[in-house]
Length: 60
Image 1 (cartoon, rainbow, N blue to C red):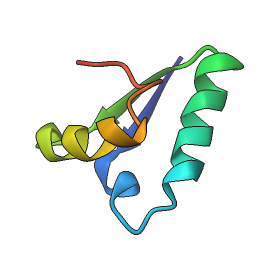
Image 2 (tube, one colour):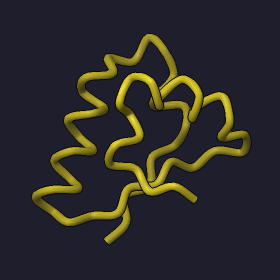
Image 3 (tube, rainbow, N blue to C red):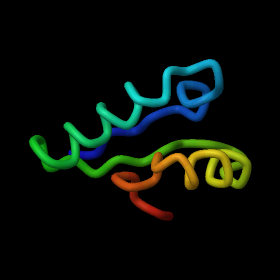
């Protein structure tokens, strides 16, 4: 199964630890693929990568 997350859900002031917990749980226990849907992914990638937000998200 694939979990698709809209880019608006990772915008600040989102509590980033909860996003990371959700992706960890879905990846490890449910064996889901996680994708972030965005028209312009570059700013999200640059913001999330140093915070560990891309650890369980599939690169596309």
